Image (tube, rainbow, N blue to C red; front, side, top):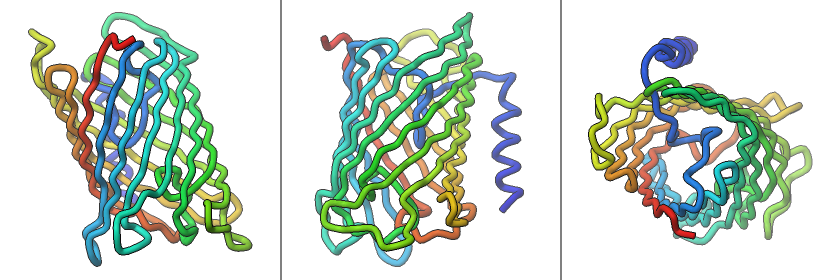
Length: 267
């Protein structure tokens, strides 16, 4: 298990002299989408172990300005019952406070915040604002872009509320600290000649959480491949791999398939 983490970190660091991309699949970079643009995402993620369970997520996002980006999400799943149902909503905002740019490279930092509402049962130790829990989150992310390589790291704090029809059990964790390390590499094209060229990006991401004072921790590895067509249409394919975990969780070893389309100069 530790050898896998060592390999992942070594892979990210070894790419620092190569080229990069930063449209991560499992996390958000410090950079924002283009101002006055609107993006629509449709994602499905699920597990095939011991029966098929899946969640669908519809997301709308916009670049309000070069420094401010907003997202809204709606979640539907059969994670906690036999049939698909509406789970809840989340709202996310990111403000870029640091931007150091030069030719073919930059370093950026951003603050982000999230609010989530959910009506799912509170059966897990893992706190997740992606449909499972109601709560608030705040954090910071830094991203380094160098040619075709991007490396990004983030940290966040999450506080969970009682869900709509369900209350936390006494002693159940309400707080979580999250941390991520992500790397992305632009595989194709080798040389840009047109914005219509299809981009192929490879990603590897480490996603960790800990519940303070509870001795509960988890770590996932999330490799992914991404295709960007005509600079507007994006396809993400990812598979999470649980490296270690000692907390009750529903979402583990999940696949992710996501489609995204972007509209520029909308307003």
